[in-house]
Image 1 (cartoon, rainbow, N blue to C red):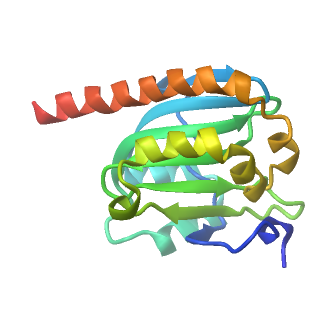
Image 2: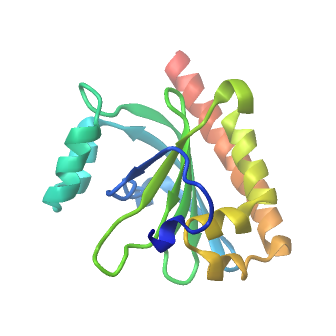
Length: 186
């Protein structure tokens, strides 16, 4: 069994392709000590996904194999959790309108293997995923980082530095979601 799965049972689906990288100009990143929290409004489109993986034939083939008819399309706020030292994204919460989910994104292994564990979010059981995600960041971040292979980083998380950043990031996420919905409803 790989080290990626030594932190408990895996739920959701595991992909051998990383999440589509955040678009820097659409992402506001806040420093919180050992981690950085990013907030981005994303409009996921099939052509953009194919372009993101075009440089890797294996990843492009897996995307084609696992995509629904017509490709993946969704949009909404994404909340990213990065290692402040090297920028690796360990966690992502995609607060999407159609298929909300979150990622445990392990570092690429020594043989180039990617472990991107995508967990669907049940809105019926969990309620508003935005509120749920920020509650998880406040109460379960070290455990979630560890599950994503970031146990060393988890030990460095400082709750006192993290809390004001999460408050600001949550306000940004709520504003991005409201701004989109106003435009979309017009």
